Image (cartoon, rainbow, N blue to C red; front, side):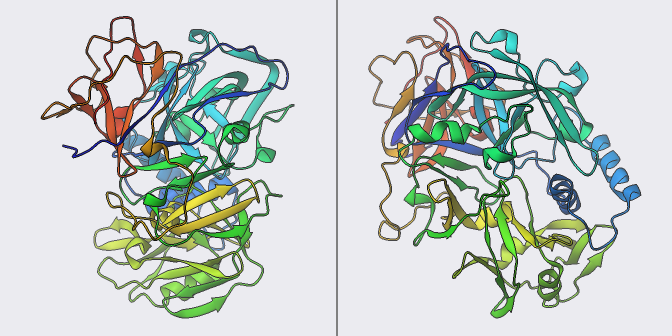
Length: 505
């Protein structure tokens, strides 16, 4: 049971606004700084080979060691055969989003720029285990006639469809006439992912809509935010958050260090010309890196990978796994790499073991990026660091992440704009009557999928009522006396005389 609830955030509701064609002009309303949970997908099972192949497919990387097609095909078949209604691979963190008032759980991906969703246009067999968007249910949906989108990856996975605009609510903020890409065709690799779609947070220059490229949610929201930035907090194996318009000093220690970003390739990209294995420093002249929440592993050049595993007793490249493995009992060194010209980020040894490969053999969190010179720093990096994506430079900032459930020392970080974890904000068309100020003595925790119940003050539309303590989301209160935790905090539908929302103090 929580000892204190310091704020209640975000109840979103859709509003009607016509979208001009072919290029919509988006509007913004709601909170100018807000946080939305990145819910840890408890069904996610770490599979190092699958994570590596997903990254290779996404970026069309060229391996320097052979990865036979027969093997990748066999892997996909094994994955497909092991998954039924609840996918256990793909996206480790899912973010609740409403589109036209319809709730979805999306993968927030700083390595792409499309907002695409599972839709009712797909065959019913492709919708198993997913929430999906039905444009005919939304009074704010508008077709973008003639616009299409298509994503195709190197392993044969693909998704494509049509485009429209609708209101998109993330946390306490809504963007109207946001381009939404509706899937009408999808490969099995995407169907097996736990996410109901993807919200891209790279630069709009790599959006795939044709013939008229569309802006990302972040680009459309920037002008309404206190600061044109968002930050990713993805602690290992637990729920984190994305903060928009501000940085939350309770989620990091020390000072946020910044590196200038070169956005010409569409990514959050910066120089990364040196690295350390333990205390030994090496040069990787000419290398850049990107910060990608849509990739799981850390991928670097072959020389860096070889130098790292040379310090790990019993390690070797395992062609059957497609990457470096080692005895799970092995002692691992830390890995550090430059982000920008002067500051190293250090990944602790505990995060360099990605997980069990087979038996007593483990798969490394560092693997080869192939023949290129662009490193990819994925979720393993964000398990250790609070990452700030600031469009004003553009620049990328990073500081050591505070462990989940703890708070950073008050003196350890620079002042930040007022956090929504200390004030209430709403993007709703109605507000509740005066809230109660006392909590039930023992709130209950319900299982995933439980339906909220209660009567009293009425809201319309869809949304979450999220509760925070010490800057971290602890769950959401949906009805008097009922406490929902983690993944059960997905958006719900409020009906007349159907829902009583009671803030707690």
